[in-house]
Figure 1: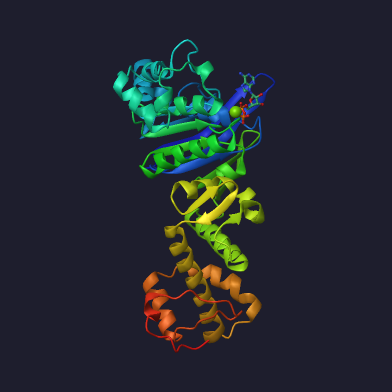
Figure 2: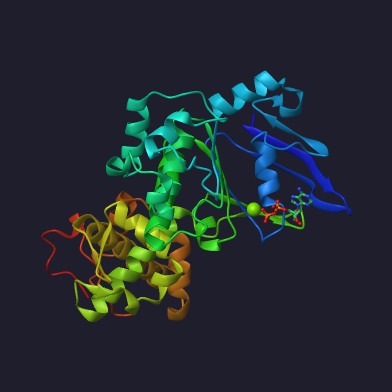
Length: 362
Ligand code: ADP
Ligand code: MG
């Protein structure tokens, strides 16, 4: 059973304006879904209805088998307090309360939390030294992180986020996205509204709204892992070409388009970004060596075994390589007699199976 089922959801205003027009979809437990679409397409309306802050004109929202419209006010309040974390674009912090008091209050959505828990949640958001600051003494990114800490204080199962990175600088964008990524990895269900394709790509699945209609449900083009792998290979190849361990980020055309992913990869310890330079960490180097080895061996296999034309090798290797485990990669290497180069003449990084086989062919 899906966690959320949305059936024929419609929200009609005077005019008539259809903020939502018979939208239907489902969200599985543990899924991370991005709701995309231009301004005015109905994204906030949808999220507010999912969060019981607004009611539809027609249609139903069913969460864990229960129709939200059938809940009594008390049950609705309990649903919000126990199951739901809401992250708004506007921070909605109480201006005369400190960060820690705002998290403790978590007013309206949650019950009171105790100060120790609230402080711990703020430390988790990297705000340990801002506990007693007022919102006006915090940057936009810090306020947003207070808002996230507040939304998470009751460990909600379902996180709803409306443009969580709107108006944030790049560093805070990356921090906020890594917090949401962590929630997802911990098993929470995340429904995130964004109009930014780069942010949307971090989700597992995207839903698109246009004029209140669900026009498209698309699987993210690059699964997160495959995108990271592709970017690691890009850095590896740029370093191979330049022979440099540190690479100016500006030299990588992919850097700008994939900035959020690069920043997340830095947090995960695959690369370091330092004063505009990129370099692979020890772990990143090992993973990239393995990825390049797998890719170039796949090319060599297609070239020798299927006599595939050289200019089709790269694309076809990209299609098959993700299915190759490291054992299978070593078997291919052995089968091909540990080749040193790919069919284009580029070196294939050595694997454990190549140890002691120095006489190997080119
Ligand atoms: P988004 O979040 O995608 O920018 P919204 O869900 O906020 O879009 O709004 C969708 C549409 O509904 C817009 O055309 C907006 O003008 C309209 N709308 C939203 N709230 C109201 C309201 N209270 N009264 C009338 N129209 C509204
Ligand atoms: Mg909106």
